[in-house]
Image 1 (spheres, rainbow, N blue to C red):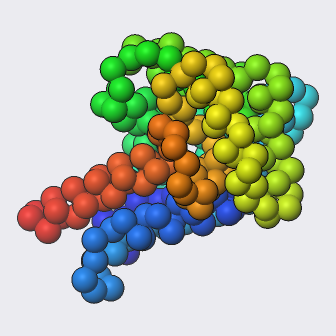
Image 2 (image 1 turned 90 degrees about the horizontal axis):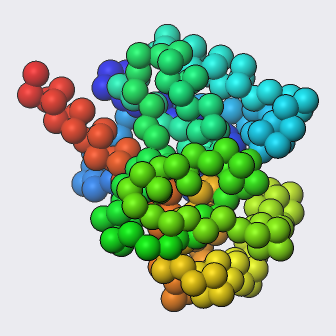
Image 3 (image 1 turned 180 degrees about the horizontal axis):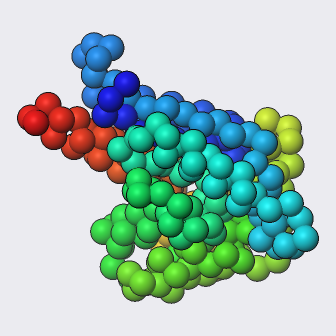
Amino acid sequence: MENFFSILGGMGTQATESFVRLLNHRTITHKDQDYLNYVLFNHATVPDRTAYILDETAENPLPFLLDDIAKQNLLKPNFIVLTCNTAHYFFETLQEATKIPILHMPREAAIEMSHRQNGGKVAFLGTEGSVKAGVYQRELEKVGFEVMLPKTQLQQKVNDLIYRDIKENDFLNKDLYYEILAEAIEKCGCASAVLGCTELSLMEEFATGHKYNVVDAQSILVDRTIERALSDRKKADHS
């Protein structure tokens, strides 16, 4: 297969399935050959990223991710899509391990937010690992936003939704999701929220109809992936 990209996912698997579903759904097609060429690495057994970021005595996911990058180097995709937000804690090390460009989901989300909103206060919602890593906070502050990080009680609700409900019990808890958005945006005085966890992106895909202004990082990554893949295809067709 020529002219393809690779998806480094499986963290978690349901969220990766959501990414691929959106990718295929948003690709404009009239026949089978219009869909995009890609290889999916659904590496479900990568150790928990948040557990390691919070406690470095936990199993380190980086060697597993570097092994994935090494395998993708052999395949030589045009670019790599890293679908786990928390794994962007290791982004620089992963990018140094390959000449193949890796799309940076937090950066793309921050750029998109800057197009939709001219500065102001935004809430960041993600795993405790993503909060501690500070990747989203840095990218959002670069483009002029004040970032509200969840206090303990709100973060616990986010944790419960991600781990207890979605990862452990395959339960899309819409009531808790709406409660989190209301607290993050209304009670904290933010104009909008950035979803920086793919389980929250999965929630946003199915919990439609709420009134809140949300920028879903995974959704933005889907769009950027399609744009880049179609651009690569066009270049190949004209070469």
